[in-house]
Image (cartoon, rainbow, N blue to C red):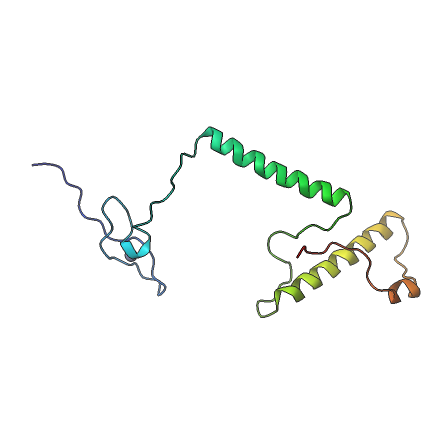
Length: 135
Ligand SMILES: [Zn+2]
């Protein structure tokens, strides 16, 4: 008798929290509806590939650092602190950049060793060039 692996059931989780349990595609752990027909990763993910990925992310990080050092706006990455789910993303970004600007002002005043004071004319002039999300 030849060894024949038992047919597997799909391991994917359904939206209702249960498990799919359809027949899995041969050689896969999921059924055809849950990605069993996907060819998956195509190329090799060898040392060369990993090196290229790493150098790319380093280039990206250096670019950001350079922009930041030059006082240019950089796109904020990751979750926006204090984001409300119902709120339009533009509003969240605007609030976040306003917060950043306020923080920068407070940091500057702290560095000077003074209590934060605001010039009325300066406040009336509106916000200056802060960290803004790129379009
Ligand atoms: Zn399935």
